[in-house]
Image (cartoon, rainbow, N blue to C red; front, side):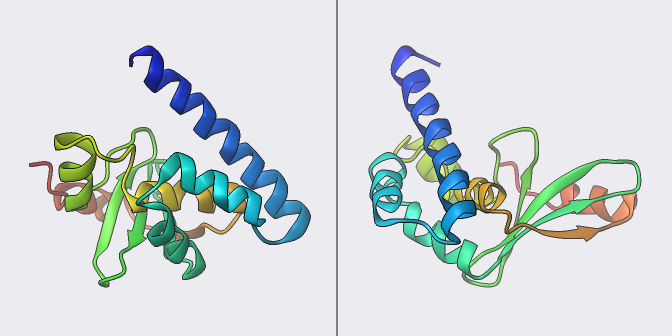
Length: 141
């Protein structure tokens, strides 16, 4: 990461901390927080907030303790994201984040971050085999 990316990442993390504080205090996000989120995260923000509103974010955990996130996309397609990285299996991640570098993250990753801070992640269990199958089905191209 270069200096600018470090600053943007630090600002984003601080802002997500504010999301957690404000949401726990008020049960909603204020216009000020929404405006700041829009400034930092831009394009993916509104679709991510829609995913949060629809409670489309789940963390799936296996008996061995392994876990991953799954976000039900607006089209009904489930997208898989690792808990330990910024990777998402959606086409937007590959195109807008990796290839064109237009966005810091896709709407699914942003929805995960917001849902975590707002305490709105659903939990599910899967066998180790089911979790492995989810990973095998991911498109890494």
